Amino acid sequence: GAELWSTPSCGHTAGGIAARSTPSTPGRQDTCVMPVTLEAIDITLIALYFVGMAAVGIIFWARGGGDGGGQDEAESFFLAGRSMRWPAVGLSLFVSNVGSEHLLGLAGSASATGVACAYFEWSAALHLLLLGWLFAPVYLRCGIATLPEYLGRRYGPRLRRWLSLISLVLYLLTKLSVSIYSAATVLTSVFGWPRWIAAAGLVGLTACYTAVGGLAAVIVTDVAQSVVMLVGAVTMTAVGFGRVGGMSGLRSEPPPSLTSEEWSRFFHIYKPPDDPSFPTLGMLLGQHVAGVWYWCLDQAIVQRVLSTRTVHHAKASCLLAGFLKITPMFLMAYPGIIARKLFDAELYPANGIATPNQAFPLLLQHTLPPGLLGLNLAAAVAACMSSLDSVFTAAASLFCLDLYRGWLRPAASPHEVVRVGQAFCALLAVLTLLWLPIIDVLSDQIFLYKEAVMAYLAPPIVSVYLLGVLWRRANATGAAASFAVGYTLGFGRMAGEVWCKLHPPRPGSAADALFVRLHFLYAGLLLCLACLATHAAVSWAAQGADGGEGRAVDETLLAKCSCGGEGGRRAAPAPKDPAP
Image 1: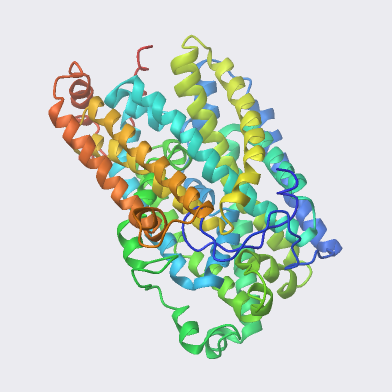
Image 2: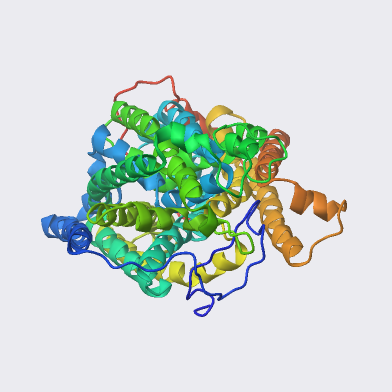
């Protein structure tokens, strides 16, 4: 693993988690980007950023982040005392999503295919409205601390434990590993640092200020990180457009590797249904499955909304984040197209391996003057750490509140729960570092890797929550069946895709149709429909088979916590699930 991950990867991925458009050789030397020497002003800006982030954790620790007592201590650590206002939460929602995989991945995908990848960003505005106006009122009026806690009261404690475990696996496979992989790639490409050192430093610092400061420290640092990231992205975009002569200069002549017709398609959102990367039909139909999970049903994102003072603050924060999600197309995708225009020979050599993920590092090195280079490097680190801290706090909440106190040790004191959460952050950091070499084996285009994994593993979660909120007859038996069918098919699709990459099937065979030609967005939609159908059919057939548990919880929870209830007040936290 260490040898495999010691140098940057420069391959290219076209489809799902295991697809590659060009051969990849583990451990090959990367000649795409040569390390640079920073000026004093760049070093100063980066140092000030790291000192500031460390200071936030120390300040919140000194103010009593771990010295309280009783229930208030755990609520303060995991939910910031449920006291946050909408501007801070809205900015935190935005930067928790826009991580280093966006700076690296969106620029890389745009350099390969154009602006079509920005549809993922624009569709997030719809999902944020769904969060603010459908799910958030339910969550806040129920007084839950974690999303699996809702499932525990809606379907019973078994589903709560299942979702907590599955969410932790998803975090490890996607959010944590993808964020640190992207940031380490940037730092390795620009500075020539060994990836292990870059990754360990970023994970260690983020885990430290998250563990000592809790969610309040995370949201405060997210506000600062959002400013750094947006300023850095704006400056890079402005300098890039200046280098190519503005939008007209960018579109005027294609780079040498593309025809005029191919280059014109880079500026169109629409892609045909059989496009290997971003088919518009697949994005319109299948992308919303992973999007609803990511924005409405994932603890790492929704935990910010749970920390707001009222439902009104929650809705306002979702609106702010939705407006901010319009910007990545212009601040992250267009810089990738600019990199294709300026560095076509480096990214797509005539007789070499395509290296789209190097678009962002190339822009950093060859377009930015001293000062702006340091600012944008700090922005890249800010993007990584804002994503990492959101997942660390969410994972600690899931493990401590749903598994440790809810299952393993129900009598644990709030002080003990906080200490376990801090230790779990450290454990998660180690596990993340151990998984990073596997990503190099699975895929070379990090943005599509993350989207594909979410498309395969999110459908069962979407099914149980959506029917749980909207359909009173949905019960625990149907939810368990949906989980069983969904994850059997989802993990089967992932395994089949990797197997077909290693052992290409015969063209036209069933394996070729299911695991090679079927795009992950279409596969995700089919998986979601299968989960919804299973959940509905089994729930209808098993009415009363679960002892009335599903219906009893439904009457006490949904009747009082529906979207048509009172808007501004938050219910007191509901009693915990009975110990199994």
